[in-house]
Amino acid sequence: MAALLTRLRHLWLGVQLLPGLLASAQQRQLLAEMRQLGRELPIILKQPIPQAMAELEMMRGERPYPLPSESKTRQLADLAALLDRRSPLGLCLRRSLLRYRYLHELDVPVTVLFGAKFALGESPDKKNITGHAWLVSGERPYHEDDENWQGYTVMLRWPQE
Image (cartoon, rainbow, N blue to C red; front, top):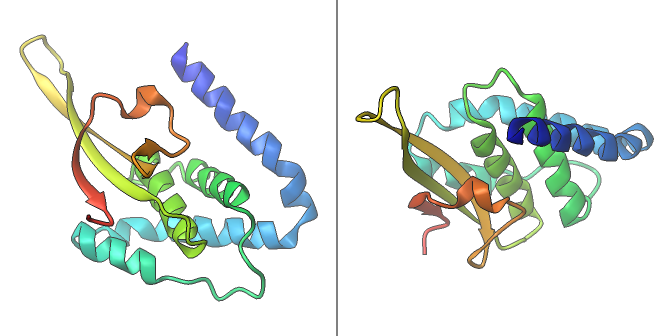
């Protein structure tokens, strides 16, 4: 049931953004730019996380128009992450890094948290480690459902304090 609700929320995001994408060439260009960066993320992440994050921070789009509002930029980054189904990276990592890169350009003060936790394995005596990435603003999750981040131990934060 939870998976169905998540898929419906993802579909709803696309439906909400469709009118703006149809009407605005700038939004379509920005979405294409975000999708291209999403395809480059696996290559960028071959280097250590601090170097990869510094590279994302230094990127600035050379576009003839400003980024849209914080909310619209976040939503477009979320859609770009959702559309890249073939990526070897998990959705949460793609979404967090795309959000971070573009919100950083807007000077929105967010921090990326990389966490891990034990999850049930194939048998009761075996456990798997699962990871998650999300953003916080201050110490509050930034547009992240509580069930997605609760229970994770933060292993790394960027920018580091």
